[in-house]
Image 1 (tube, rainbow, N blue to C red):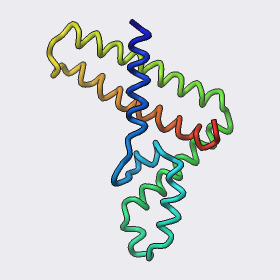
Image 2: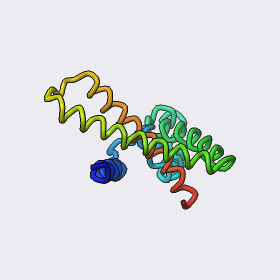
Image 3: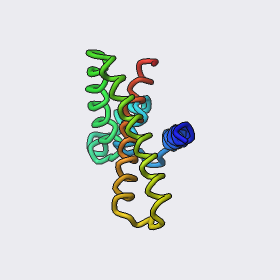
Image 4: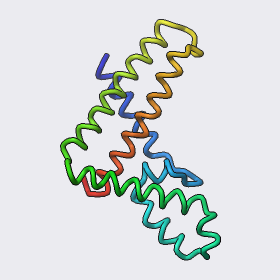
Length: 140
């Protein structure tokens, strides 16, 4: 049963990673850091007045700064960085198991605990994608 849950969790993460944003946001750039440089390069061609008003440019710059901090964190202690990813993934799998148990035992999909777990799963998915994106940048 745990293997099935793990496979479902991994597939869910892969589906979310493969989604493309039509209007890139900060969250999009954090999960796809390889897209930041191209966006910033295109933003440099905008007049100053449009640059600061372009939400995509602002999002790419903010994400670039935050990704830079994560790259430094990974450089200083790669083992701790990798352990964070593993802990996020373990928490995600445990959360999926808890959701499965709640859905199986309680037929109400408006259960506050279930809804909170699903929000937590979405946040964990985001964190996993961000950290894995940083690893992709360095060729890992």
